[in-house]
Image (cartoon, one colour):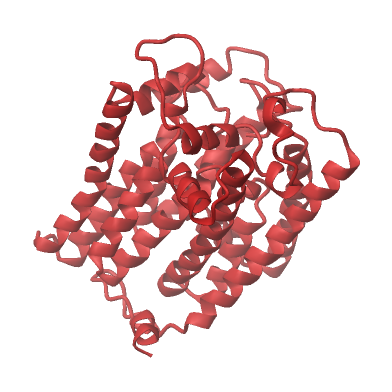
Length: 402
């Protein structure tokens, strides 16, 4: 009963009126329904695709050198492309040759997901390639469910139940939402990131600091979450600094700890940043990134190009939603969305931005507002659902998507 009462407390902020009481089932049921329905759709499409069509001959997708070690299709279809690198970190640890200009390094991949894969696999005694990947798939599925619960909680408290439900549908049915179930970092970043804002709204800064620290360990640029959380703190205290703000120091402390770990592992405290250059990702102004994109002929048919028109469309779409997020009444959300979006378009390539953008959850709140009318919501569900089916089928067969 005490836990339910704590969940039901209104969030008092100086810029908003007292919020109505909250009942847990108002969030749990829509989140669970969106999660189950969307995941069953993706699993069904993936298994059907593998049973019906041949895998691509591009070994970078299904990773043919160890694909025979993963006979479970439900694991293999969610472990394409970068899933291999997370598995390598969980199995072998990090490696990086300082100053190397050739090859690729697993130092580019954040430690939270492979750490959870290692812990889970050793806990159940299934530590081979298949076991590590299976745990990764399960962890991502569960993290996505947790993310949906927190997102529903955040939106229902700040706005209303209807917008919360629409936002959850927009996220779960988004054409690229299968990445929230793959051995990728999207879900394990989204869950603590949203949780941090929920706890900040409740004034439980120790939990907000812990959640923010986990977000940093899930994504390098997760460090930007300290800015909107600090803004929330100052707003709640009428810009007076008190001892509770010290909990937010956990966020940069997590990044420093990660740097120290990388130094002892590889001899380079910024190996996670330097390794990105091996994938041709280096920091530069956004306009230079777009200039590089338009320097070649645009390919409008596939994602598998550094000049993919589909990458451009998703990038511009996210940008429009981020711009519209500044109309949201909780201003820490557009601050977070903007700070998260800018690094995505400032690293030389637009490739993978369609996947990275899944982490900008305020954009989906805006999308939920845009589909408030029943006809728009139905249209979105049909179009997004069709996109999910097509892209999941391609992904399960080992083709590049994002």
